[in-house]
Length: 140
Image (cartoon, rainbow, N blue to C red):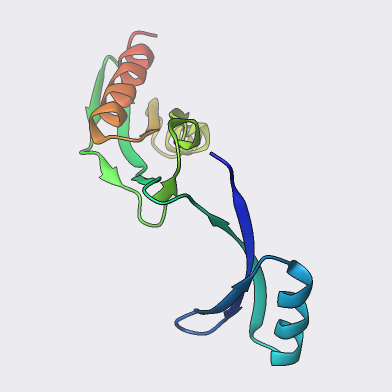
């Protein structure tokens, strides 16, 4: 996909407003400066017609204590969804083990607990990743 970038003037406020966009940053910058405080220039990708879809990020939390674990229902992360143009732009999968929370719980209650969050583009995959990591930690 060939990509083009425009430079848009945004009026900041409670509800930001896109005023207009230009192919050159210089024109947009001069006009934004003349408009004054509360106006910025931001680059904007221009996509081809019919190209693009929304990718969401789902999170699934788990707590592991001893040989057992509890999984929460996956939840879509607010504000993390974005428009992507091909599968190479998809958000990556990952699992984060919160070692600080585990150490704090161990210090406060003496309990050995692991807290983790798995991130993926579908709720099913986030659940799978969380369960796999929880199973791994429970086996240690």
